[in-house]
Length: 112
Length: 116
Image 1 (tube, rainbow over the protein chains, first blue to last red):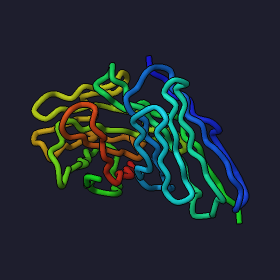
Image 2 (tube, each protein chain N blue to C red; image 1 turned 30 degrees about the vertical axis):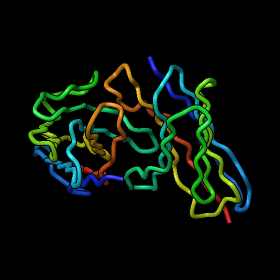
Image 3 (spheres, rainbow over the protein chains, first blue to last red; image 1 turned 180 degrees about the vertical axis):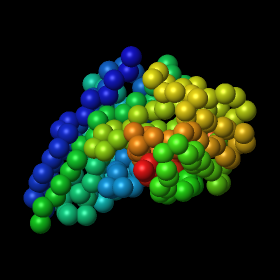
Image 4 (cartoon, rainbow over the protein chains, first blue to last red; image 1 turned 90 degrees about the vertical axis):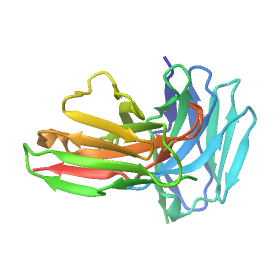
């Protein structure tokens, strides 16, 4: 059974600081996703990572994937208040119709 | 990315009534649609998977007679919450995927259901 562990679950940080969210998964997957969710809203796709060593960057967010370690990271550089949200990682489960298996989410609060 | 439109965005209904939520893929044909439920401060919980023209596959613990899913066309799936109770109040999100199984799924805007 594919499991996804995300940590930390809660993160409070100051503006301007850097931090990393980690996402581990238990078995081989073809694809890893990072999403952002604002309160009361649906999911916004941030990154889709397909291959080992993949690195994608958008603004202050950078995501990477190590398929051998079954680990993805979402790195936040010089955080700003607007990045406050809940971030989820998810992976495709090839053994279950490629449904998404979700991490528990990381609630990120960035203080001015 | 592709666009998935979900309506309504919020609905309040009385206990015992039924509520229908629509999920449409606007610019692609959705061969598979997923329905999720999300409780406050929790991750998404998959309720069911539907393939166009087939009966939905429900996850363990989800009552198929209570949560009716119809995927009658390649652009529309509906979730009907029948005989709603306050405990059905939640945030419901659909996602749709076109093409082969290992393509990306896109998410609707979500529906906040409140049963009073």
